Length: 640
Image (cartoon, rainbow, N blue to C red; front, side, top):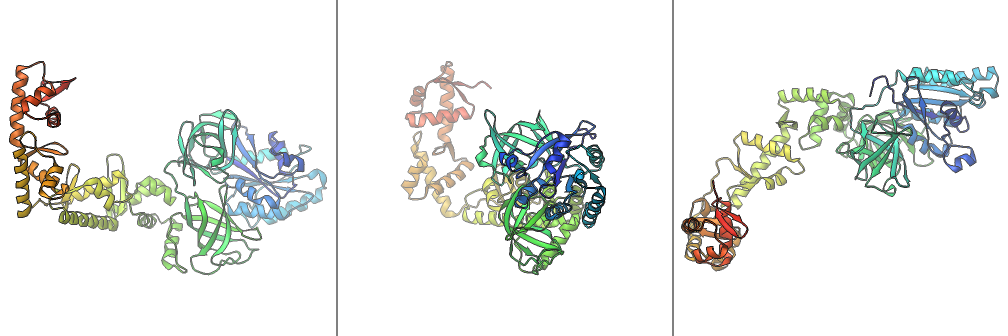
């Protein structure tokens, strides 16, 4: 998107009946009260949305939130993702309880750009306007919105609307844009169905570029969907970018399978979690929060019940900020750096919030000094140390992009630090043609020892086998690893000359099959039985039964016989002596020279003096060896 376009979200905030919805209508011409009950009662109950066109032609999305204390949960669903706060205070009421709570929520969510609309100035005198203006400045002074402009307006008379628009235009130039380079993440705030169209979800696109035709996933439900169409502010689009209010028509899913709080997410981006570490801040006018206290965790458009566990084991005091682990009763989709709000279980009031630091922590002890140290490293974004922590958590190779997404660190910075850590010998690179994966040196050494141990045990238990199937080895030693880095790991281990790989077989370096005298004698007996069978030898099952040994053992011994050239494997269950195969091949070539038009299975049966049971697999063997070619019911000599 052109840098001159400014996609961002304006969120209203303020006490009930202070004129938020009327003000939005004055700015945009849209009535955001869409529910029949809202129109009947004259108050906003749920989120409302309206587009606001700016001078350069770009459109900002306005999220109008309910002001009543009973609907703060809905307000929170709309407040996340806001870039510019439009705090609304009525001149005839002044600052009210929900004004303060909404302001606290915006502060906890890290919203640091705002404008205050002082509404209903037509109902008061100039002295009251000045008084309330000073009151507003005072409550803003201790927040991230301190110094925000206060614009007196009367939505009914149109007074101050132009001035308010000018302030919005000014603010639009200094707003931090959402990241278009990250994968798609859109918390869902509405789900509905339109006849003839299907399931539609709406939300503010937090990151990435959403495109028509792309496959996405609804988390934490794990439902894969396809984007059938996209609409932004009532206009059909091929794509929506981060910062835009977006409606997406989804294929392969019912509206009953999705709800507010779910997230439309790029495939293989973030994994839902039940547990996270965060810096938690309590508001000053609340009670202490003890270890294990039950809370309501608000993130994105989702509310989840959970419990809080300060890492130092002590309560969090009012106004205090400290590291804590939050354990949730259902999953959320978080990224490092995300903001959240916490409310008390009962009575339900906003008590604090914070910033997500770690989305894949271990479950901590009551007092966990090591966890606190790790927390501070991750929070400080000491990149090399943070990378070592992340790699120690996930015992499988990671590429720079994945490390960046789970750690919240910039990918280019991650690449630089990974290179330095490789030089220092702390991590090991697994280099492919198009990508590089990294693993802790300690993990590399542990996995190397495990591979050698498994191969050694396999050699002991299966002395007649050349080695171990590579895929079986990967499943046992490199569980949950992706195929490509697993293959690169084995290649790197092969380069150290500790193991050898031959096709799909992996073995300890220098290992050779050493057949025992007993097995050698048994192999001689098996070969003798096959030779005696001539062109109608017994199957491996029949040999097994005749000699009273396991079929698996027969097959392993025959594999050795095939290697030393005493037998030839014609089909999975049939072996012939090498002399018989050579003789049959010569007879077949002679017959084909006499019958250049080809021979049938019946012809070959007579030639080999055998039954169809053996003639068919023998001819198929000669086809595979490119001696003959099958054309319908005939075999003809294959021309080189």
